[in-house]
Length: 387
Image 1 (cartoon, rainbow, N blue to C red):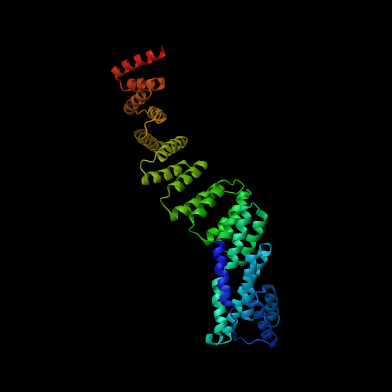
Image 2: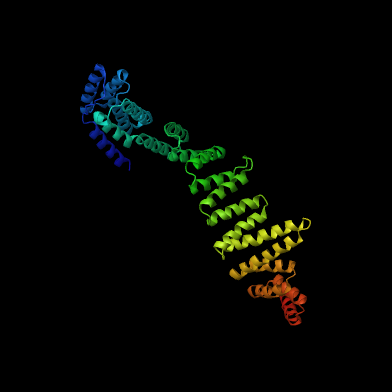
């Protein structure tokens, strides 16, 4: 990629160095200086050509040809001389920008474009090239980052921001450096800048939310994480991973009803998602327990208990594991749902016939439902197992 860019650059330079005769009015010194600079350029003596073009600008600071050529030569030298590349690329961008300003001034003087067609051709090239130095600086910053030269990378990337304060690639690299250095607050500041520049970039938002969640030093950091995750949902409302993350964040705040709500949203998208079913039964249980501690909340607590049982039954029907059946049976026994307990405790026993707890659950359900046959049968099983 770098090689291809350099080839394009050289072709562009060769094209634009073919002696244009500017119609812009210059001083006699400026005119002679341009002639000398062009000669050195044709001889490929770029340092001397640069010197002569800069002398032109001492007498004619708005000379478009000189401004453009100084920018182009600096860009080429930056590509060839790595030691001073940052300086050359900064200079290239500076002179490109100055040439655009000078051209606007020329147009403001009322000169028709056909009278300054050579300058217009130069500026057309500049408009294509003006961002090249910034791109090169970002690449240099990335190279330093990959080499773990973080201070050097930061210095280069800060220069990029001096030229282009909204450069997304530079900002991302700076944020990565701060994360690597465990400077989460600084990284958060950068990602908030990115949020204003590219508000729909969900990848940036996910990193920002994660940084908030894991940075205890920031006030209300969990709430800020939730707010950022909600921003992502506004863009991708069915993102299951984000819904899980919000659920976890709410549980950190002990807002179990909202955690449950997030898992119910997941189940509306994926009705048989086992993680969402497991989470739902747990959050329903925790919310039920919370409601039991408050006055006049019995009806709400009972409704939450029914949800807990429903989610547990759905999970067992989906994944009839020993753990899921045990959880369901204890939930049913606490809710005194004896008929259901009789059904699922026997399923538990079928899966784990040597599990005394499973047998005792069957016995409890049989006793409560007055099922003497099952009582007798499982009493024998428990006795045999105890020998």
